[in-house]
Amino acid sequence: MIGVNQLRKGVTFEFDSQLWRVLEYDHYKPGRGSAVIRTRLRNLRTGSIINKNFISGDRVQDVSLDHQTVQYLYNDGEMFHFMNTETFEQPALSRDILKDVMPYLKENTILEIESYEGEPLDIALPITVELKVTEAPPGFAGDTATGATKEVTLETGLRLNVPLFINEGDTLRIDTRTGEYLTRV
Image (cartoon, rainbow, N blue to C red):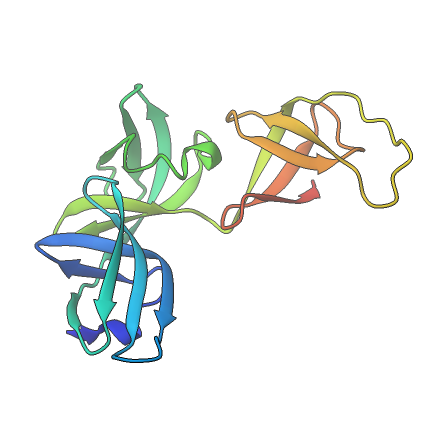
C-alpha cells in the first residue's frame, strides 16, 4: 500500500479492482480542510480515462508490472500484434488501449510490453522514434520575426509542426513523450 501523496505521473496502482496509471497529478491545499490530490487516470484494461480526487492520507495498492522486450509486427484493424523477442510468443493489444501511442508505432519497432499476472496491458515506447515525412507543403520564409513552421504528415499518419526546411522524404526524430519534432536525421 502507498499513500496517495506518493502518486506521480506514470505510477500504476490498483483501486476498485481495476489497474490505473496516473497521467496527471496535482496536490491542492484549500484554505480549510485537508489537502486534495487531483489525478487524471487511465484504466490499463479498458483504456478509459477518468478524473479522480483523493483526500490526503488515503492509501491505494501499488502494483509492479512485468516488462518484456517485444517487436511490433502488424495491426489487423482492431488488434495490434507484437512478438516477444526471447520466447517468440505473440501477445496482442486492442486499439482502445493503444490509441495514444498509435501515431508512433512503425512495423519492426523494438519496445517493451507491460504485463500484470501474465496479462499484457500496455506498451512503453522508446523516448524517440524516427519517422519519414510523406507529405510536406513547400515552405516559404516570409516576413517572420521568429522561427516559422509548417504542418507535415509522417508515415504513420501523425501530423506535426516542423521548421520550413523539412521536405518530403526526410526522416525526423520525434519525442514520444511530448510529440514534438527534435531533429532531422
